[in-house]
Length: 449
Ligand code: PEP
Ligand code: CO
Image 1 (cartoon, rainbow, N blue to C red):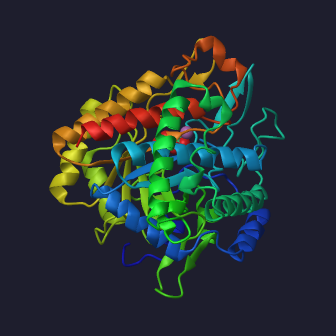
Image 2 (image 1 turned 180 degrees about the vertical axis):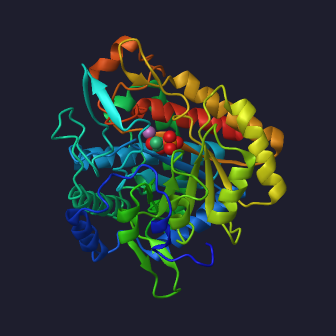
């Protein structure tokens, strides 16, 4: 945080990717309303996450961050929230068991409603309309009315985030995430697959361990660690007015927290070192992520680290590399070297999704499982060569059995994409592909030790 930071200091700086609604009366009214709403997360939880991310950065833990590219107002059902939690719990059990390390569970959920776009408009059949910018801003349907920005959508964003978080808290603290429930998370569809069967073997071993522990007096009633209740939320801090409205000063410490989520990240398109996003997030005490794409250079990265983690604290800063399977080999090593030489304390995470998106001949935006895996393999190998720590993964995934990414054990092909292509933005791994990747990441992690 610069000396001159205030919760408002971002306002005089250029902010990319903002809807053009700053001056509207409706927008001001919405923002002032949200400013009075209760916080969604609490400072103590944010500090707990930061501690765990710091541990992961030093090799004592591993981060799984995952969820939708974009949450939507339409897909707002208990089942779909529960299934996203289930797959993240399954993945974390696979990693915890296979690689013997604590897994930090961080959802892209309960606030992931705003999207940066490469183009301001979209043209279909000669008709040009504003791009879809996430349900927080406008509607995805391709007609003039739907694509109009509407600040009232921010109220729904807040309310849906609150309800989603409420359900996640109920599930996790209410015992759904308890290790004794490992079998319950194996959904029918996956249970029949090779991954599901492999998962079931781990679940059986965990059962045996739990029976043994119970016999010697250790159970979830007296040992809270078995409840696996800690689940955290994150989203891209894109719409600065909304994020600002939910930023509050902690009465205990006097520090500022963005209470819209535990963890916020700055996207690859809004990480200008002198821009409003970096300024705003430089003053909050939450752990912060930066998407590190192929256009960044070493100098820029160091400036970002110094601005966003001025006290060089463990757990404060996560660098989310999203280079693409080809580019990662040339772009990532010099960045890792620079960080290492500078002594900056960061957690390195791999997002193998965003650098590997392309359009198929039949017009679907997709990613191939093999390419995703390839970027992960390079990421781990590069860290091994540099003797640095690969501390986590960042996936776009869903608990549903969608067909959006190609490949995986069921070999989803171009012609399968139309059967369940449901994403509002980027293609997500389905439940089976996600679990398969969890096994593969476990192997990469184990081989690296
Ligand atoms: C995203 O995570 O959905 C995203 C837009 O990523 P990036 O900023 O890395 O392109
Ligand atoms: Co995305």
